[in-house]
Length: 70
Image (cartoon, rainbow, N blue to C red; front, side, top):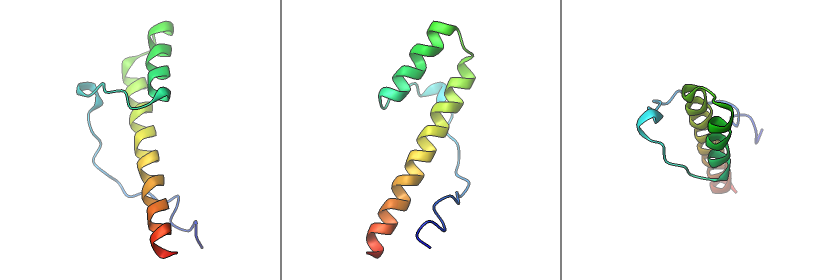
């Protein structure tokens, strides 16, 4: 039952990362380097970065909820 709500995500407002190219960690830095090296579409990299940030934020939220119940 611990993981019951782990994979359920509530829809949140998506930020427009086109105006926010702030790198938060090594993963994002690597994505931008790959984008430049292989001339990938900017929109695709923004979507991946946004998705990664949402998923990590969701995991942190679920972990903190779990810790409060222990």
